[in-house]
Image 1: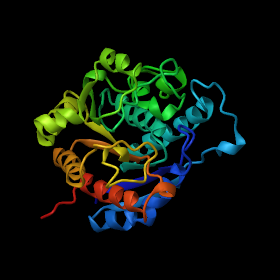
Image 2: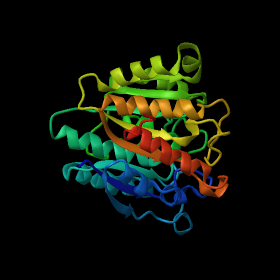
Image 3: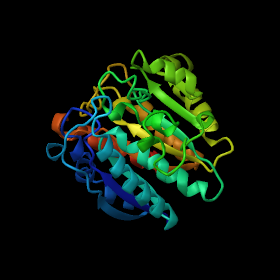
Length: 302
């Protein structure tokens, strides 16, 4: 029987809008565990990692707020992901803000590095998340984790597993981006990352984009990690996110992304982030996140 381990990382230190720390609970309330079992998986819920409370800590350097705390959580989280893979479970990570991805990807990467293999990465997001402390207009680390995975940014987050980058840029793909900071664009272009904007999806179609994205992430790798920021989906369908941007994916487009990933059978881990029930409508965004997780794990219409 296939085994899934759920790991909650209720981190909210990477951004300003409060409530995203309740994201893991919102997905559980929406029936995540039981619905995965209905697909035939053995499910183990590891609970939530310990995360410092904002009111107990000082933000520190305004260019990278709460860096020390986020780095410590990321180290523990990466170790959990490594252990999960070693024990034969598929890691399903629930955020929290997107800064947790640096730990998730480092954990997957380091597990396969010991097998002398690299991994790919499919990053599904309205934002590029490619800022560094030097370029970020806000100092919020949830706008930096993809850069960290590719070796740009503070060493505390680029070298979580003791080396960088966690993912070779030629195997990293950003899908659905439609909001990029001015100074961030230079890093995106310099990095070698493959980017598919919403315009690319509009012009070329999502099926073509995802076929190419999967091929790039899977080329000469053990497979690929997947991280889904729920703000990829249009706010009409996913209102409960911290940084909504109009013009996102439709309900069906979001499912197609996950269904094609499932069809590839090359996904090594899955992460769902930025669900904020405080600003959601009747847990609508968390319920959609659960549905998308099921599609990624192989649920089919027929």
